[in-house]
Image (tube, rainbow over all chains, first blue to last red; front, side, top):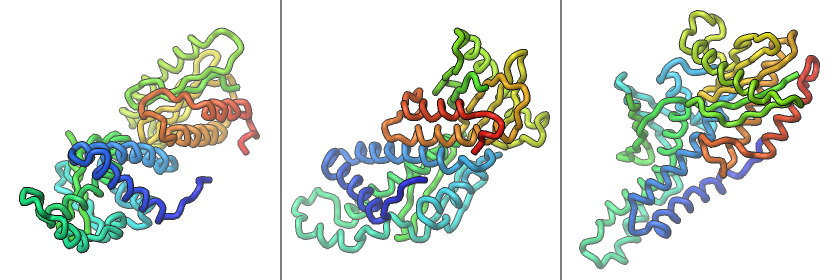
Length: 177
Length: 143
C-alpha cells in the first residue's frame, strides 16, 4: 500500500516549488524557470501514468488515452474529472476544468494591489500583467504532468494552459503528427 | 522454473535483464529475449491473428523453443516485460499473476525520483524483489 500525505502539504509544496524556481533560482529568467518547472512535471507525469495504467487494457487510439487522462488520471490527482473535453478531430484537444484545484489557493485579486506599493520603475510590467504571469507560472507544472503522461502512453504532444476565466482553466493538448 | 526475466523499454532499449541459472547460458537467454521482441511487435501490429488478446496487457505465450517457453507482457506505456521459463506445463493464471507482481515491482522502481526515465534500472531492492518472486514462482505459489 502506498503511504499517504495530507493534500495541504502537497499543495503547499507545489506552491513553494514554483515560487522557489521563479523568484529565487531563476528570478531574472522566467522562461528558464518555466522550462524547469515543466520538466519536473514531465517526469512526474511519466511516473504517474506508469502507475495508474497498470490494471487496464492498452489504449486503441488517441481519444481513448485522452479520455483516460480526463477521467481516471484526473480523479487520481484532483478527486474530480475534467469538466469539458473538446476536440477538432485533427489532433487538438481542449480539457477544461471549471475549478482547477491548484489555482484555488492562489490569491488572484490581492496580487495586483500588493504590487502597486512597490511599483516605481515605469518599465516594469503592469500589475495586471505581473499577476497573470505569476499565475501562469503555476500552470507549467500541471502542463508538464499531462505532457509526461501522454508521451509515456506513446503520444508525443505539446500542452499549454489558458486562464482567461479563472478559476476555470483549460489545457490545450496538441498532438504532434 | 523461471530462468530469465527482462524489462525492455518502448524503443526496444533494455532496462533490466537478469538470468537465474547456474550454468553459463546467459548469452543464450538474452538472445531468446531479444528475438521475442519481434514476436511482440508482430502480435501488437497484427491484432487479427491474436484475436482475443487484443489490447490486453498480458500477451500470453510468445513462442515455445525446444527447452523454454517465452511469455510476454506489454504495458500501456509500451514497456515490455519478458519471462523465459523451463516448466512445460504451467497455468496461464500463474503466469498472469507473476507478471502482475513483476509489473508492480517495476512501477515502484521507476517511481523513485532519482530514477532517470529510459535508463537501466539499477535499484537493488527491485532486483531483490524480482529475485524472490522468481524463487517463489510455481503452481500453487501464487499467494
